[in-house]
Image 1: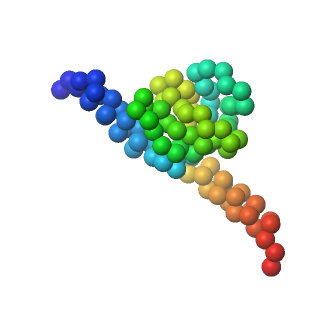
Image 2: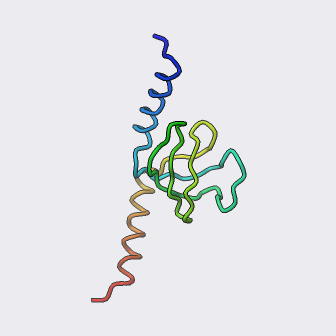
Image 3: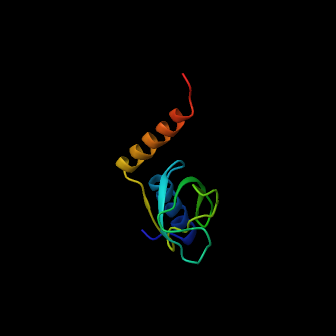
Length: 99
């Protein structure tokens, strides 16, 4: 079955939304264009998606530059990496608490 371009775009958006739902943690490999302060290894969180489709991001360095799945290089964090991040965040949070 052949999709019209509109149907193909909707299918692509659906697949991306399943693969990278809101809250997914991403690690950047490289962007298709040179952006300052966007080094390889930078991590961020998916906050949504537009009609291109591009992934809206909230990067750990405060930037909100979107990712283009067909042009930019990135990967999802593994469950082990997510657990490590959560452990580090918990430890940082406990450091400021007094008993």
